[in-house]
Length: 128
View (tube, rainbow, N blue to C red):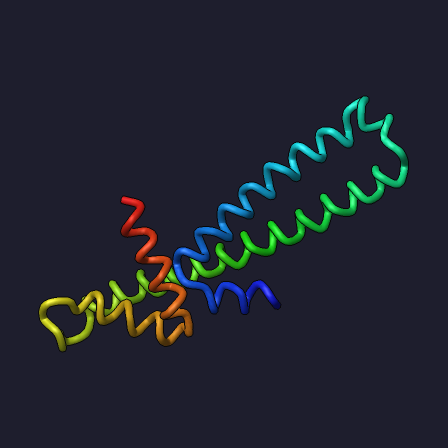
């Protein structure tokens, strides 16, 4: 639940920072797991092995949680964009210059993801 609050209150730069931390944590998890499963890992004291395994498991849960939140946001944003494009073709043009953008904004507001989804769209535009 804390991750949901975190992403809702972050700006684009902060979300990028968390994404980088998650990427780095994932690299550390992979390396740590490899060390614990290697022959050298068998030489470590049992307490270290236990705490190392627990730390890797906890970090994996956090990384997976963040990725799931970002994935859900991406799904909702994509659905809102698709619905907005579809409805823009069906409705009368209230704003002849950008009926598609208006329809997408309406769909995102309806889905309750406008602020976060709009940040994601801005990131996608920058990643061209």
